[in-house]
Length: 436
Image 1: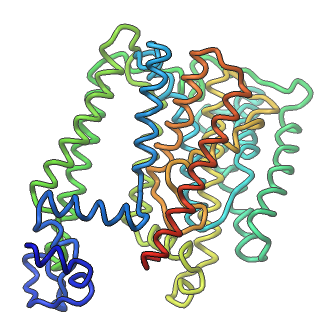
Image 2 (image 1 turned 45 degrees about the vertical axis):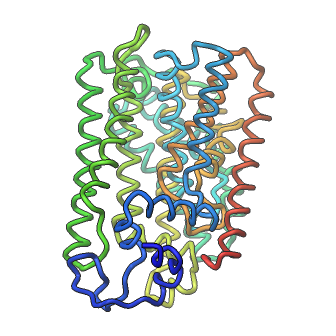
């Protein structure tokens, strides 16, 4: 075992052993270093973790540490921060921001930026309000039309960027101005339309599942789905002769996720002031898991990472770079419009300035703070959840303390700068370690 430790870097690149596929050896005979890590057990994982940290591969570690620090600090300043009502509010407000941040994560994976998120959210809400409230169109059809318009706007941005060659920064900045004008025009002289009681949009953030079984059922479904994905991945890797997770690791991962899921369900259900599972959180988690599946388990998702890592290399590999870029901006536009419906639901009205102010900065900050690189090709959809949680937790804590909005802006800006600095240092460290 000591020889393995001394020669860890060499064994990953040069060591050769007869491969039989059953242990996870690669078909060509080279031993995958991940297999050796798992064979060493807990010590192997600890060694691998230290190597990643030294090499700049921090992953979600800074965000998780930040969330723990935020919880400890604000709970010590105000014991209502971790109350059931407060955590429920955080989950609801995180959902709308998180859905928009998912779209931005996709764009950032391309190494690009979308500055039109706020105005597209406003147009989406305006389209829905005008169709349903003013013209009496069917509730569901109005929502679908709003999402479709958001997607079409995103596809338009992607077309000018990918086909015409206009930088994404310029295209979406022009969109930010143009779509804001369209939003004001759509809302008319009155400038606002109230959300009808009982409508879909009203229920997005206003409905809670009072039956406690709902929260525990969602937690059970999430844990079961996670376990199934691990087992399917292990089966696929085993049949292909690739390294696979041992049963002990699968059990440990599932138990950790299970504890988190059921603790959240308990907090939403049981303590005094608990209102049950918010519909907004269910929708957000559904979009999050779907987007995560697309990004990690589909050819399309792998092509997004390839284009973001090196567009020319991706093109030479046969990937339709223009199609990937156009469709990614389409996804971002549709999710921005969806986020606009969340904002309208929270405010109880669609207005001509919905999506203005700090909406754009919060969405981009959520994606970056969560761990998605601004330089493209690196990140996870989970970043949207973690980053949105950080921002909304800070805002909730400061609101409970009665802090002014300008203080919130300064603190959020400082957190965003810290996230970018960590990303830059991480990239430099990886480059020095020869991992980029």
